Image 1 (cartoon, rainbow, N blue to C red):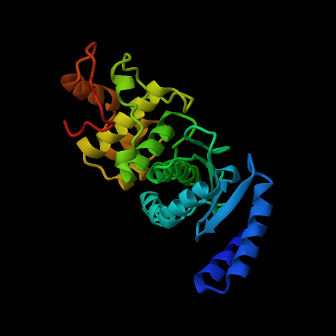
Image 2: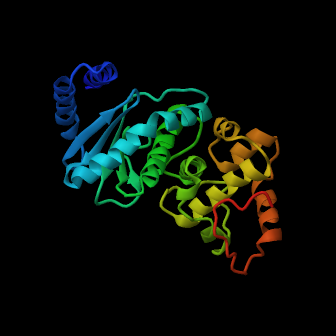
Length: 267
């Protein structure tokens, strides 16, 4: 399968004929489509990606897939640099643009089939691709970011927003306005809790925009919890107390935060 994809990229690169490209594209669709959740059409391939769309989307799906093909390698280079230039096993990624899902998912932190919600706003699709891609890189890194828990879910969200800031999914107020529990010292063992996700997003943005650490430094200081990442970066052990005190000074607990961004820093 990967060999067919490599051949397709070579044919495309050297423009060796539409018929040859279409034949190879059909082979990839037939090989991979058997394991996807629904019928798909392969639209294009790059060095690290095959991009499919839900066949029911027709011409719109093809156009949206083209937008992913156009930027996926650029975004991959940014994410790979954050992770110290590692390459996850099992590539290429298979991006599957779907009409009937909300958000994005993949079956396991290290799996490379990335299902992403279709949208006429193709930067939103590209943001979802980055978020799922980050989780695969984090799994390959193996230093503690867990895509199924607070710290890994938070990382995928902030790095996706770093590349696509206008496409953010606003979650930060959920932690500020719902009791401010400590998901920094230890993870919540789910990626589906909006309060823990909000806590992680705020904390990681605080590390980056308030304390001044680069995304690469934060990513490569990975620990089993956000507190451990903070300790790896600073040598200190007061992650939750320091973060919460600064938040309290600007967003007093018990009052609606009114926050409309995920990153209010620097304060």
